[in-house]
Each structure stands twice: as structure tokens, then as C-alpha cells.
Amino acid sequence: MNFQQLRSIREAARRNFNLTEVANALFTSQPGVSRQIRELEDELGVVIFERNGKRLTGLTDPGKGILKIIDRLLVEAENLQQASQEYTGQNSGTLTIAATHTQARYALPKVVQSFRAAFPEVRIALQQSSPEHIAEWVLSGKADVGIATEGLSQFPDLVSFPCYRWSHLIVVPDGHPLLARTNIRLEDLAEFPLITYDVGFTGRGHLDDAFARAGVRPDIVLTAMDSDVIKQYVSLGLGVGIVASMAFDHGRDKGLRAVEASHLFAANTTRLAVRRGAYLRTYAQEFILQFAPELRRSDIEVALAGPEAA
Image 1 (cartoon, rainbow, N blue to C red):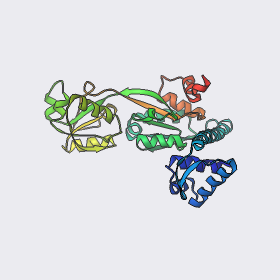
Image 2 (cartoon, rainbow, N blue to C red):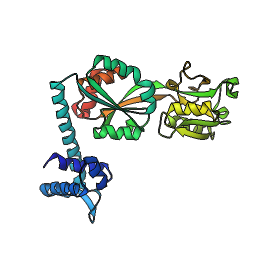
Image 3 (tube, rainbow, N blue to C red):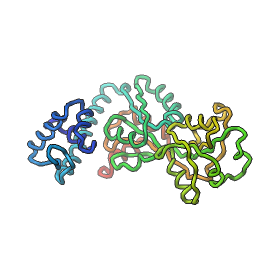
Image 4 (cartoon, one colour):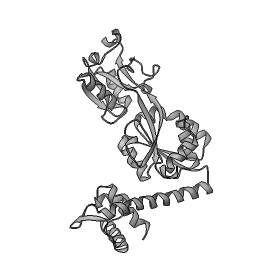
């Protein structure tokens, strides 16, 4: 038994049994992946995957149990490597952070600046994507931490920590009719074309829920992942924007006005996630504590250990 066999099993399960994708992820060939899987099945004397001809279609019941053990083995192997690096070079390495654009653009800069001052020998790799991809990267070990508002708490193999709460703002050009109204209602917003985030990004679910509960149908004419893109199209007069409060700067966003919307939409919580059972280097823990200062180091350690350690 070897680690390449274990990785082949894990990736096959993660990639919906598509061996071409598994081969690409492991930088090998599809026949090589098939051979690794078959050799481990032969060694264990257990059929791990259901098959239709040569195609994998699912996990057998024994395979489901074996996959859990393989996951633990690979996590511990990665932890061993992280621990060895911790003891040989405690303050150097690479911290990979996966975040949505809004978090990377508005929430992270001051934290990264402070972190770099404390750990000048640690390189930071910042990756931006959707919450779903962020979760996948953390689960696969491609990222050490993930930061997003939506979705991270839905993955049982991730430990996610609440970091801070924020609300949405309405953004309009100078002179817009909404500026003359007080106590703006959802019905008022529905009179205008709206520009906001894609589904699954930056609290969009709370916007949709609010309109649905009120029985109001909004006219959302343009969506984007990027707050700056939303504001740009608002400035062109294409619609009324709804953005994260942190994304508006009264000094920088010339020609635009922000209108309070916390009474219209539920508050949002940004979360930071790490893989359950992962070994976090000292500098990774310190980054988490700087991003979420209300946490304690013991909170992180207990959460990573899981209920088994309680």
C-alpha cells in the first residue's frame, strides 16, 4: 500500500468517479489511476468501487468505510509534514488563503499587512473564487484557510468560525430619486432595475429571502461577483446597486451615494474555515486570530480536534 494509491481512491470519490479528472489532479495517466485503485483493492481483498464495465459509478458499502479511513490517513500524513516544517522553521513557509473577491478586496488587506509585519518570512498565496470552490480547496488541502460569507458552514469536514457581521447598502448615483425618500421599502427598490451579487455570493441569499417574504418581485437586471463591477454599472445609470457595506468608500466612490439598508435585509456573518483535523502551523493560527480577534487559540485547537477529543 502506498500514498499514491490512497490519493487515487480519495480523488476518485471527490471527482464524481471521473478518472480523467482524477488523473489531471494527480498529474498522472488514467490507466495509472485505474491500476493504483485495482492494486489497492487486490491488496485489501475488498471491492471499493462499483463499476459499469471499466467505468467507476460509485462506492460500495465497504468502500464508504474505507474512504473515511483513507481520508484520515492522508490528513495525518499532511499533518506530519506540516509538523516537521513547524519544528524546523517555525516562522517561514506559505499561507494559502482562499477568499471571495469581496473578502479579499475589503476585509483582508489590513489583516494581511499586520500579519506580514509579524511574520515577514511567510509568503501569502491569495486565491479568489466562489464559496463552493473555496470549500473544495480547503478540503483538498490546496488552501490552508477559506473565507466567505455563504456556504462554508454547510460542509461537515470543515470547521468554520464566525468572524464578523455586516449588512448591505443601497448604492445609487448622485441625484437618484431614491435619495428623496425616507424609510425606503422593498417596494421602493422594486420600482427600479437592480444590480447585485450572483447567487451564492456575498449574502445574496438574504436579499432573495427578504423579497420573497415580502411578496415583492425585484427586477435584477445584472449580477456580478465583484463589488467594484456592481458600482461601476450603477455609476453608468444601469440600475440601483445592492452591495456589502464594507465595499463602499465615501471618499473613493465619487459620484455615488450610499443608503442604509440594514432594516431591509438580514445581517450576514463572514466565516473562516479550516479542514477538520488539520495541523495548523503557528503562523496560520496567528492569522486566524488576527482576522477573528474574538477567538482564542484554545477555541481553534478544540474545534480542530473535534468532538472525539472533548
